[in-house]
Image (cartoon, rainbow, N blue to C red):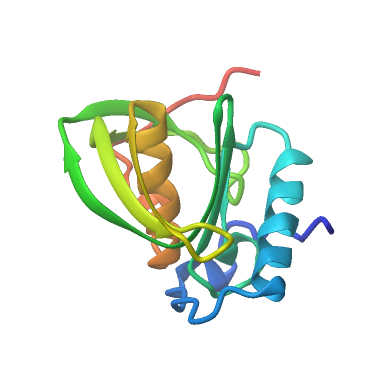
Length: 153
């Protein structure tokens, strides 16, 4: 495993749409492992998308409290409800905004072995799914901001 460099702020790769993964092989599993290690070695991270480490593939890793997922080609199947969130991003340090997200989201993806999985997440996990899947589309959380939140030092 290796720690990858996180892309920040106005890096153009953060605005590019990621490509579907056609074959899940050892190379893809290595990228997912590297993303997980990068996430775990970065303060205040809950999840990371592949373009945040410079790779334009539809890959997301979530490692937050009891939630641990490596997702390949994730898509949102359905969402329900609304919640106001305070949201930040590893690629935009020292920024926090208020967003409105679905309260519940169901995602379908492949796991690191190519098996189809369906996950329903509520609250923070729903927010996390939306945030990361938007990264795969070249969108960032600032696009969804309804207000800036002052960060307490």
